[in-house]
Image 1: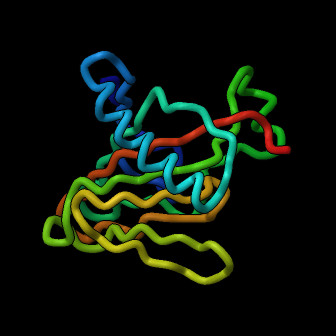
Image 2: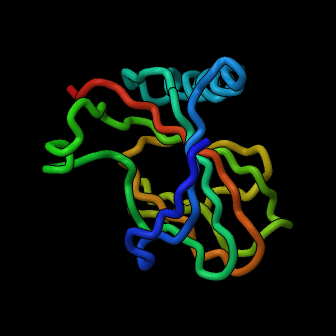
Image 3: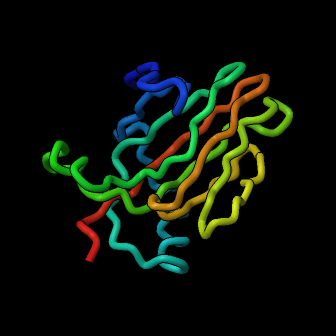
Amino acid sequence: VSQSRYRLDEDIRYSQISWIDRNEENNWFFQRIQAASNKLNTKCFGFDIDPINVIQYTIYNGKNSHYDWHWDCFTGNALDNLNDQRQRKLTSVLQLDGPEDYEGGTLELLPCGSIREIEKKKGYMVTFPSFVLHRVTPVESGIRRTLVAWFTGPDWR
């Protein structure tokens, strides 16, 4: 696990992140995330996606930890700087804490101009297209932890 504190612009995002690379020891867990996301992808989206090889561990710890409105796909000139980066197509967020562990910190999606709050439930995973705007509202108290997987694939057709 490699760690970093992500504070590029604290007005947009304030959290701590680490990366978990897929290996022989944790492959079973990656397979479970992959299987659940593949099932939903087949049923709802039909995107051409690759297996995941890395998962982001995110900690929103304390007052004002948040991530403002954003999407997870790359657009415009950002692709020019990514060399062999493939398009992010699906985002899966697995909640590691329950509503009793923190206040605030709600994951909100904005799929068609209407905000949808995602239920705070330990072990609950939501999967959505990476181009959907979403945010994590400020954590008021406690700690919110998640695992985030991005499923990439070839350029959109």
